[in-house]
Image 1 (cartoon, helix red, strand yellow):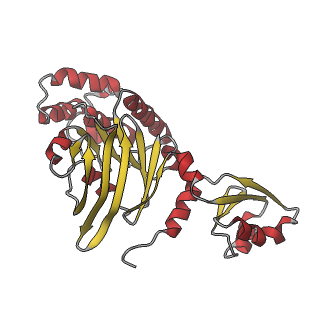
Image 2 (tube, rainbow, N blue to C red; image 1 turned 60 degrees about the vertical axis):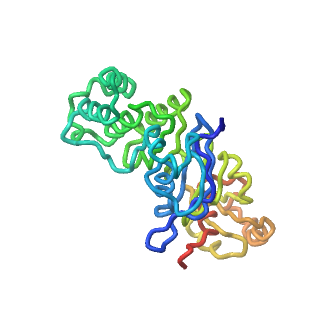
Length: 307
């Protein structure tokens, strides 16, 4: 038996001659939460659909839950919970009616007990008669998650599940995701939020359909080769304008009243920054690059295959 819920190699998928997923290989250990990151149009959703059997790859191979992603696609679908970006339940049905409908679709013999359990677990019991269409974004999110785990899947695929919900609802959602993972459920979640990525056991970053980095947050940052200097100043915009385009300075990013200046060549950076070191209005320090710094650097290195 493999220790990985997802283990795929060389996945490729094109639409109308445009490559959307390009030679992607990814492994996710059982019972772990993997954050799947990348800009819009990077191929995250297509990759997720390839993994759960909704799409067939043009080439590549691998397993999901120990099953072949091409040959065993129908069996994979029955063991996966997939939460899409757009709320996809019936807005003119109540919370309970939606969950009962999903339980019927899966042919669950004990559906009443299963629905009751889901209502209690996601805190939906007191609102169970409320129409789904009248729910706020956070409550719709809870309902969608309840529907995804109703059939007790072994793998949960979440496609930008917290887009458009408030910080409190996001935090409660992630607390539930960690409880599910602690119970043995494997989770692959796509997100644009760096704080959410840092909640994951591992992350994978994709751009233009190609996987650029994979591992723990610490390892991805540590192997990026990125060096960052912090400049605290009363006039960060003016300083940024003076630094832009200097040799070795690949990124100049504003962080409140400070700048993060980053690049891969520390010697070239320090040579460019030397004239500014003596300015008493600027306080310089060396800091660890953040996850956002690393991903912006990765994006700058990535190339669109059609350009």
